[in-house]
Image 1 (cartoon, rainbow, N blue to C red):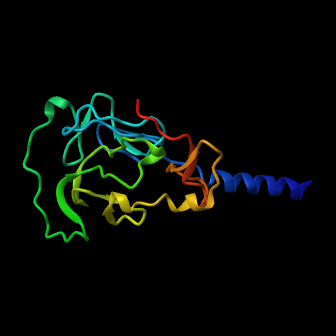
Image 2 (image 1 turned 90 degrees about the horizontal axis):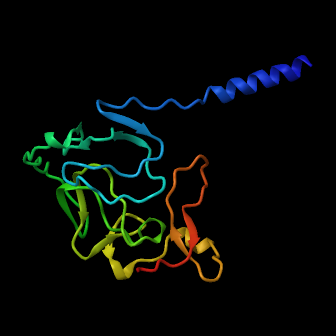
Image 3 (image 1 turned 60 degrees about the vertical axis):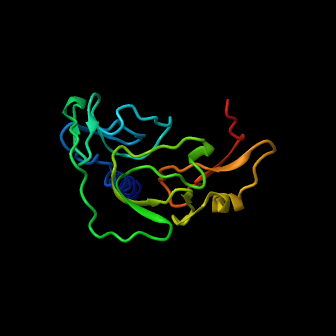
Length: 186
């Protein structure tokens, strides 16, 4: 009995030692374990996807993200000059932008025609016009796209297709694709 009690107590100690502690957010931010997108000074009414996106700190209700990453009231949005490039060298078929946040990929999450964009913009290299990101994050022509690599290992039922469905994982091998009916644009 004493050994069983000791095993139970030590198991509880191991489990409780991994308790989640939400990161501390900055002023006018709240932590969300399942956020999607938020308004910014550049886009006060963004089109956000439904479902679970990235965890992190998001602006409180009524606040928007500035170019510099702070959360302010929409009335406080100014129009400062964006920062200049710091001699950034972009890859093949890429160009530098001071305010990038959303790139077209070979396939958008869940096979949707639109795409979900992060809440703030920043300096980054983006694909040139006519190019999209492939699964290795290189810029290629859209007609060179292939299905997500995990789809090669999935057999979907009739009337469905394998699509990219990124998700946060609690295990190392969770799937990043699902079988869904083809998207129909109404």
